[in-house]
Each structure stands twice: as C-alpha cells, then as structure tokens.
Image (cartoon, rainbow, N blue to C red; front, top):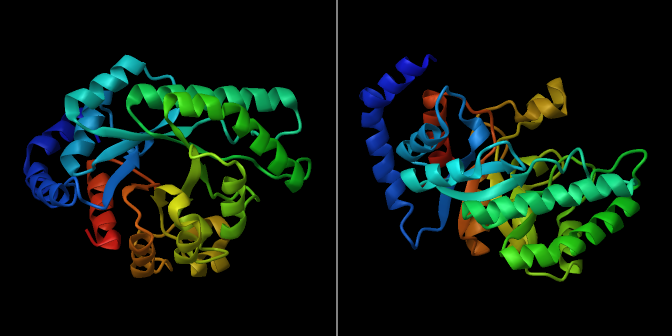
Length: 298
C-alpha cells in the first residue's frame, strides 16, 4: 500500500472501525484486566516511521508491542515513539539466540550469544520492558542434547546478575529447537536455575504438533511470564509437512481455545498475550485484532 493511501485510510472510514475497536479493547485493558494484546513490531508491514507504526498499533487497539534486540534502531527514537503514542513496549526478543546459541560447543559462539542476551536485557530496561525472550539452545547432530542442556544453563547463570540488576526476566520459549519438548522438562530446566529472573515464555501454537497447550499451561503454571499465540492445523501438517500446520488463520486450526483460556485463568495468568503470526498492512493488523479478540474472548 502506498504511504499516502495508507495514511488516508487511517484518516477515513477505517478510523471509524478503529474507534469502536478501541472502545472494546479499552474495556479489556483496565488495571484489573487479565490480558493485554500485542504484536511484534516486525509484523507492521507499512511504509511508516517508527512513531507512525506505534500510533497505528495504538489506534487499532493493541495495548503494546514487542521488539527484537539487539537491533539497528535508535534507542532514543524508540523511547520517543513509546512516549508520544502511549503504546507500551512490554518485551524484547533476543535476536541472536538462534545463530549464537548458548548451548554451542564453541566457547566463542556461546560468548557472542551471552553478549547478545546482555544487550537485549539492556535494551529492554531502556524501553521500559520487563522480559527478554530467549531460545536457550538448539540441539543438532554436533550439539548433543545433554551438553546443550548443561552449557545453556551455565551461560544463563552467568547473565543472571545482569538480569537482576536491570530487573528483566529471562523468558525461555518453547520452540522447534529439538530441546525441552516436554512441559515437565521445561519446568525442571527453569527450576534448576533457582532464580526468580528466569521463567517461561509459553507459545501456544508451538506445542500442538506434539502435545496440548492447555496441559503445558497447567504444568508450567506460575512459571509463565508471557504468552505467544499462533494457530496450528494437524491436518495441514499431515498433508503438507510440519511447518504447513502454521499456515491457518488464528482460530481456524486445532487449538482448543476455550481450554487454553480456562487453563490460563485457572493458573491465575495476568499479563501480555502477543500474536506471533504473519503481519501486514493496516487491514491485516485490523484482522489480527479481531481474531485475537475472538480466540481470547475479549
């Protein structure tokens, strides 16, 4: 979409919908509300300035945004966009954890990964966020599972003083990294670190191919710091391959959303729920707001 057309859309009938959406989300975002909605900034696919992207998300009814870090953004510009729009930056995603893994056999690679995690923690504090999402290790033919387990825990322990100093929680995510594929093991991995600054970033869609998210939520319980949502279809997985399972609209796959909501509520989860799905322009983001409201019953 051309920038001029895009901005005209914001100023026209689209904003009428936005006002209505805002009224609904504001009611769900009062201080005693359980959940707040967000997306990653990279999901905004529009030729807009940083501040305009923040404003768009605010106008659409999102409560906050998540940024990747380390990044090439000017920190002052990020803070300015936050303050000018009132859109909260709730979390940061470590942007080097897949390439510079904390479980790597090469100490130099682990050091780079550790430095990346520290940089993300520093950015998170500057942005006013309270978590950094971390993929702790990736198991490969050359990185055995048990070694990845021990090494990644050791590296996280080295960063814990920094996390505590900056008051940023390191939130370990469940992803397709051939590691921590059981909620019991994820809970054990976190508990063994013996720190309130390490918790879980639970991704609902990532576990569907080999489990049930409502069970993970119940088992992880108080360890859950943040939640990512995406959809998954086992039928598409079986027909087209594992990754194809994600290519289904939110709310139209195999996730039992009432069960997920019930598990979150029963566990007392209060906080951010961030969509991690293909983004787009204003209309696409508008659709995402609606689908999030639908599956979360907001």
